[in-house]
Image (cartoon, rainbow, N blue to C red):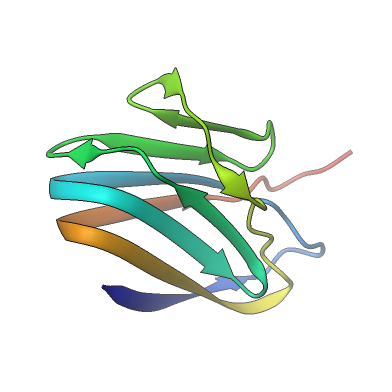
Length: 105
């Protein structure tokens, strides 16, 4: 299953956001998020109420707080509209929280 959502980055720089994906109901064997040409893929089994965290700042991915393997590249949000395209193998209902750091030094 594929679907997309548009998110606008209004900061003055490109960012690598921290992304929380909360699977309300799920029976999934693979999951990926693509933004522009950057795609990150997770091939863990995901169930009801599992939370996947994609930490763009610290370059880590966790499933329910435990680090897991991933492949490809952490998504970068460009200064503009960004389309997050999700590809999910399995059945699911999910919510996404995307946090962008406001200040960089």
